[in-house]
Image 1 (cartoon, rainbow, N blue to C red):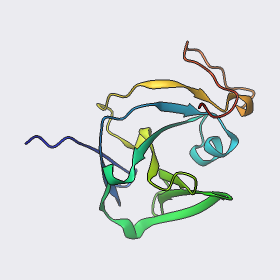
Image 2 (image 1 turned 45 degrees about the horizontal axis):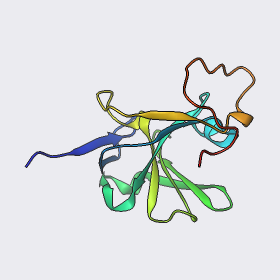
Image 3 (image 1 turned 90 degrees about the vertical axis):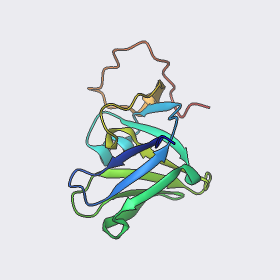
Image 4 (image 1 turned 180 degrees about the vertical axis):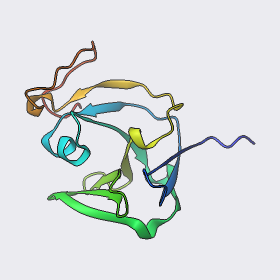
Length: 136
């Protein structure tokens, strides 16, 4: 049987994870929190069921930060790379950061969310749908 896992990890390699795909409904989030947490105009995120997500090495370096009342962001405590997030309202899933995956991974980006709070300098230059808040 072919290993269908998609591998990801942090910048320094201190932790690695695997997800079983396919990865669907990737959204580019422009909210204040994602922008600040990633140091970029947006964060490319994908919801992954918890039973399709596996930490391979080393969970001891991971640090979790409560970024809003019901949401936590997990990042590498060694290099600071964002890894994934979780929310109380969706306990059976994590949201992985697509940038932590190898460049060969193919995903389908479905739109821009929270464009109502994007940075003034952020110019969206594609034809993807834009949503003022989260897409339904």
